[in-house]
Image 1 (cartoon, helix red, strand yellow):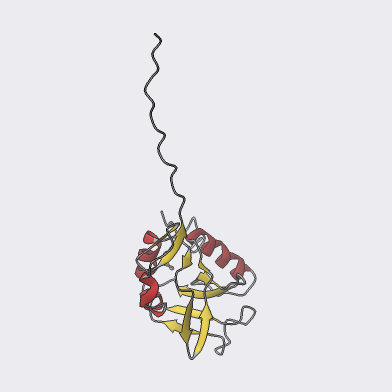
Image 2 (cartoon, one colour):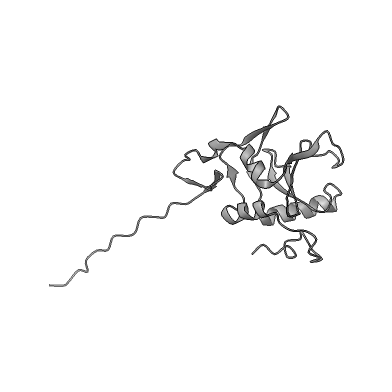
Length: 167
């Protein structure tokens, strides 16, 4: 399902880039969606996540950013801000360290606005807080990490009526 070559994170199929285990586990439960808790704090500053990218959108966004010289090889955007700018990135190595870019137009090398956020994706999800498991509206479902996806209620089954008989 998550073929790196087809999704352009490893277009030459070199095997150089891998999806980190914690991120793969997250994707197997939830491929994109809005977090139940949309803010987290780092270095005393609060950051807001609008949504997690689906894997396909993350790969396409990464490709566009790399072509524009705004993202080095080996990183994948995983979450965006309310203004739709990539905010959180995962390193495409088994450890999968998580990075934050607090200014969307900043150069990746600018350590004031691009820096390590968590040692792995599970640690990053923990930053979103234990209240991620809070109850959600009945029109949504939540993953183990509290990621909300819209669900569509199935219509009630049609009542079967007895066949009319002619008399």
